Amino acid sequence: MTTIARPLSPRRLTDDRGLSRATAQKRLMIMMLLYGFAVGIVLTKLAFFAVFTGPASATTVKRVARGDIVDRNGAPLARTIDAWAIGVHPEQILGDKRDIAQRLAGILGLDENKVYAQLAGNRFAYIERDASASLVTEVNAIGEPAIVFEREPQRLYPQSELAAPVLGFLDMGGKGASGMERALDARLTDPSKSGQPVALSIDLRAQSALENELGQQVVALKAKGGAGVVLDVRTGEIMALASFPTFNPNNPGAAPAPQRTPEGREIPGPFFNRVTTAAYELGSTFKPITVAAAIDSGTVTSMARRFDATKPLAIDRFLIHDDRGDEQNRWLNIPETLIYSSNIATARIADELGGDRLSAMFRAMGFDQPMPFELPARGRTLFPQKFSRITTMTSAYGHGVAVTPLHLAAAYAALVNGGVWHPATLMKVQPGQAVPGRRVISQSTSDRMRQLLRLVVLQGTGKKADATGFRVGGKTGTAEVATGGGYSKKANVSTFAAAFPMDAPRYVVIVMLDSPNGAVNTAAYTAAPVVSRFILRAGPMLGVVPDAGRDIRVDDLMALIWHRPGEKIAQPVADPE
Image 1 (cartoon, rainbow, N blue to C red):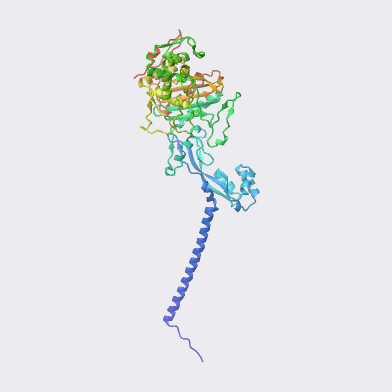
Image 2 (spheres, rainbow, N blue to C red):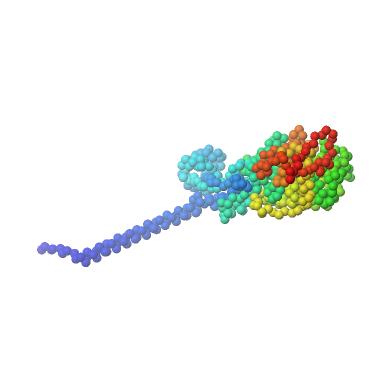
């Protein structure tokens, strides 16, 4: 019997197609869910490794990108650049650990055994920090997947040793260890101020000139060290600061350790800032401060007033005498006392002034306490608790009171700027924002001191500090080095304290040499010439235009100076105004 198939009805055909489509969609949905679940597992696994086992586990100790430090004109002093860190996951090493350690040590210049100890460990370790891109390329060529590379910030000092005592350096953890890096640590690592460089008061051009001239003199005279500072007399801004020996902040570990002299005296190392940390007896540079106190108090009312310097001055068991070459063996007036740097006449002025008034002047100049400014290393001063008669007389010419060169710079700024003492600062001061300061002497006393200091350079011990057209004034100071058992007869500290231009003072320059070994070791021959050369180089950079046709008027004081017959007299050019 033959069966004839009947064709499907259109309705039946439509139902079958819909069922097939629904089945296919269900299968596709299941596949998508399975795929999504698998992807989720993979992503979760990757996240786990990234947090707990991958290179990111080392980023918990990555250095914070520090802000840049620039000079007052925007020139870079300290910058943060991208470098590389090379690390290893010991548990993931596929190759031979000894072979890899040998190759890494050869590329990176490290100890092979120390590298092998890191590879044989059980936790992630950095092999090298602050590596260059070329080193990364060489290490990557080893082909070991367990060695990983990370970008991390590196501190770079593009000027090398220049301004190193100011800038300081970072410790191994990337924090400021000294200098302004330490003082500004919070500011430089503040994320809210990222990208905003910090401007210091330093002028890189003046800094370079000061370091160059001072460094040459330290080497030429085989001095134990040297210090120099340039201060704006109106704002207290430090335009340049140099201390020798110095170091390279890019590699502070290479700096030599402190040494000792044959006598057992320690010679400070390169990290010791002689401008701000070391307190010295700065000798006759104190004499103008004593004279200013006498004038301002009314103790001295006439520049023609004379004091007996015919012979050494005996006080109790002490004998005050003038240095050889400076003795006049006669009565000296005020200009002559400073020109010839007479200890005897200065002591007599101080005796008449009295200990209370002299100590008050020294305190007003800040000599009794550390200088209040940014650097964390600020030296203590040596200041007498009581100004007896002999202490008053000897401290008047810088014996028995020890201060830093920065203290002296701030004091001289007050002597010539109209009589206002300003705290020193290493931060750039915007126009109109200078710290007001405090008045320590009157305007008229300051005017007189400018004349007297100019005379010392024109006629006295400071002749070698003169710089044609810059109207330099200042005072020499040569003092024996203080030791544990008294004072050395073989070593001295020679200092010249200067200001320019004296008709309208802008800057103070202090140069100090510790234990110079020249044919003549007085400040007139060791420190004063450095001041002259610096001013000739840096004066125009600091905005002072040399003018040989200008000078401060000193006619009335010149008339008081006695000269030996035939002695050549330097004549200042009268101020055309």
